[in-house]
Length: 105
Image (cartoon, rainbow, N blue to C red; front, side, top):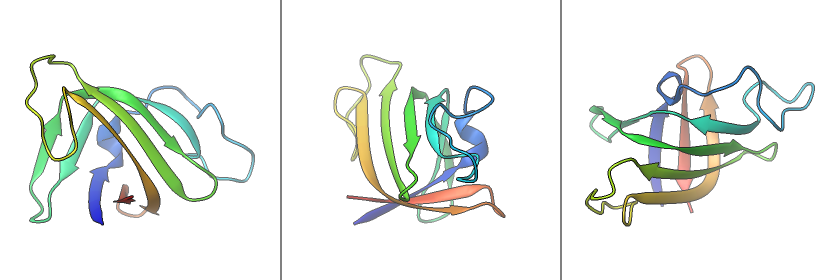
């Protein structure tokens, strides 16, 4: 399994409240529009990724992401094909550090 760490502030989540949020379930639960993305590799190096898409935090503790590189000629990477990326897995949220870690299934 691969772990990815994302800076929550870099997601620039749109909207004032998630579409699926319910009372007492936490403010991040729901579907969010991704307007930007920043990743941190295993060595701590941060990089901006020019993606847009959707991020869904479930009440059961999973995260799913669908994202697209705005460049149609983007080269494939470990997680992308033709500029498109989608993954799912359990998520751990660290509110103190404003980060979350997903274990991709």
